[in-house]
Amino acid sequence: MFRKFAKILIKICNITCDVEGLENIDPDETYFVVANHRSIADIPIIASVLPLNLRIMAKRELFRIPLLGQTMWLYDFVSIDRRNRRNAVKTLKNAERKMKYFSFLVFPEGTRSRTEKVEKFKSGALWLTESGCKILPISLDGAEKIMKTGSCVINSGRVKMKIFPPTGIMENETRQELAERLHKIVSGGIE
Image (spheres, rainbow, N blue to C red):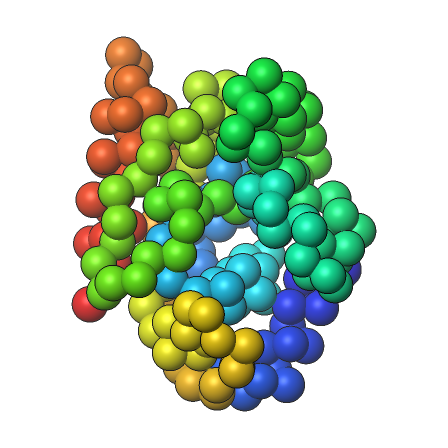
């Protein structure tokens, strides 16, 4: 249902997405999707393209925004309280159980990038990868022109999305090393 909603929104806003690498996704699998984050438009763009039952992990503060917050609760998104480590760990364990049924999207930069480059990935955002799940790296280029940070105006336009082959945490690889490796992959897909 979320994917259908996202497709309608993208069509209404006249947003075109050039996608490379769709063949890297098995619709019958679940993935831990990691992507760069330049715009709030990233979420519906990714959701409209990926043939997955997708949920999003987002900071708790976003769930307090009228309409957006209710929509996020309705679609069973995961609310992370970054200020309360104990609650965050509980929430992530619950999300880990849900990964049998849903793929999860996370933006490891932690917030929208205000520059042209992909900011450093935070290793805490990759906690679920220790369960051995498949990680699907994605890079988005052009979404920042669709909806600029701090603006409510949605512009029509074209976005480039590159979907990389799935990967996983390597043997003896720390989350920090994984964050650095994923950062290289994702930032390498941005022109």
